[in-house]
Length: 182
Ligand code: ATP
Ligand code: MG
Image (cartoon, rainbow, N blue to C red; front, side, top):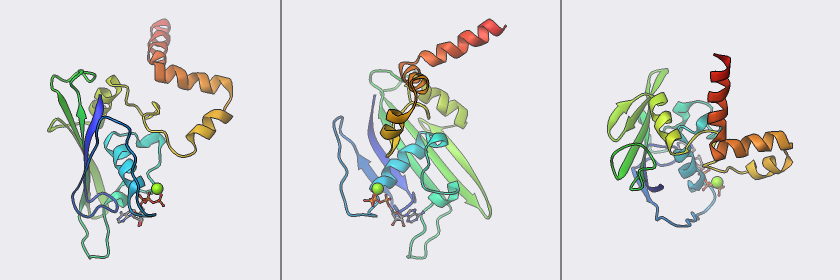
């Protein structure tokens, strides 16, 4: 499974709709400081609901909405990720999985909306599907600055926990614990 395309609308510095197409290969993003490279990664973290353990350098979700010098103040930000699912890594019967996450503000209030292949769903439902493809907040699908140093410096027990998580063992460990408690 790989990411084919990321579409950003009003997300952070991307005031206009931006399409980032990704080949199934090693990809490098270059550009001047402040040009939005890290914001593309933030868009991925946002859309794939990986935010709980990874900061997107925004205090509140509404801060992710574009606010530029052009006076425009959109009331939503949206990121769509298109994933190649030809290997059926995600248990959805289509070659492509399209995930959209939107944050919408209404005065002081805001809410998030989630879509899986165009169908509205809950965040829990979306995360369940992502987890089936090994995409979880704990999964190190995105390795952030400082993560490597942290892993090197942590103790063996904590490091083992990460390996269990990536290998998919911890899910069964949790189920086992639950079964034994019954
Ligand atoms: P560097 O090379 O320094 O790491 P970068 O290319 O990774 O830079 P980003 O961190 O992606 O840059 O982008 C930072 C820019 O995004 C800043 O100029 C910041 O003002 C802008 N930005 C962040 N949030 C918003 C927002 N909600 N609306 C408009 N611009 C924003
Ligand atoms: Mg950066």
